[in-house]
Length: 157
Image 1 (cartoon, rainbow, N blue to C red):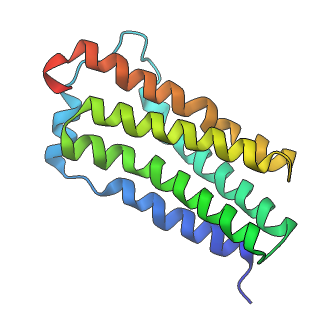
Image 2 (cartoon, rainbow, N blue to C red; image 1 turned 180 degrees about the horizontal axis):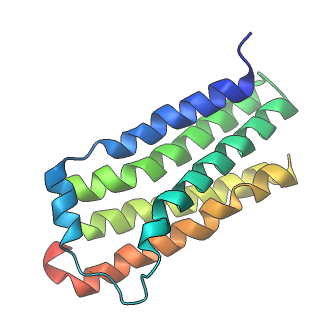
């Protein structure tokens, strides 16, 4: 029998693959951009996002197990999926459009959705809400970094 954590983890992994919908040309554009001097942790970003995705999936699993299969739980799973899609849309959206402004808007949308999700699941499970903290903390940092890059790269707004 397939366990709920397997389905949630599988969906998380499959959706996360969507962030790879970019071309080498897209990456080349991004690599030429100037970054803020304080951005010294760029090499850690893949690790940070891995932690965010794992924690988000674990949070969804906790919520699912509280009331498996109910209409409310399915709606919450849809909300988790929406937040993950917002997360994943950042790279292909910004890179395909070659627009830091688009990246900032996608990041800000994801930040708001993540915060709303955290506030929604908090009454159901404090642990599930706590597992969303890595995203709720990291997303504004990434969004601010992208916004700051607009100032450094005005031609690539």
